[in-house]
Image (cartoon, rainbow, N blue to C red; front, top):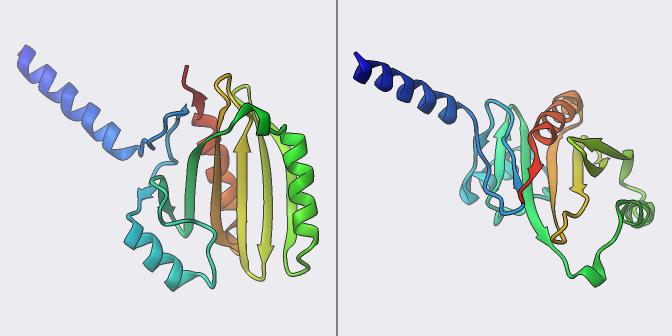
Length: 174
């Protein structure tokens, strides 16, 4: 009887883990929203070519997921302490860079706090393609995460929900 209970428990745990995508990161523990599927380099190239005029997501990154028309990616970043910028400084720099390109419309730029981690979040678009970028504050080891969600303008609510779900799962590793 004990063997059957352990077998059922093991199978249940495997199904739960398989249903939840656990990204690879040296900086944070996190999970992707339910239903997100990890993409290979080839899948990223093919998907973006078929669905977008341009992409800002590097197919070389290891954490790239597709979720209901969204492409979600994030990566670890380590910086020399002498080059470390505050989120406020990064925000001002980003706003200046975007002001030079009149084809890009910035829809959102704010600093938020989720799970005691601050993030700079900004959304911008060019025509009907939109991008939701984020970067975390630095942890005590001068590391953070950055990421992007690419989507069609009509999927803005889905992108915002995916971002909130993802950020809600993020915790710095010690």
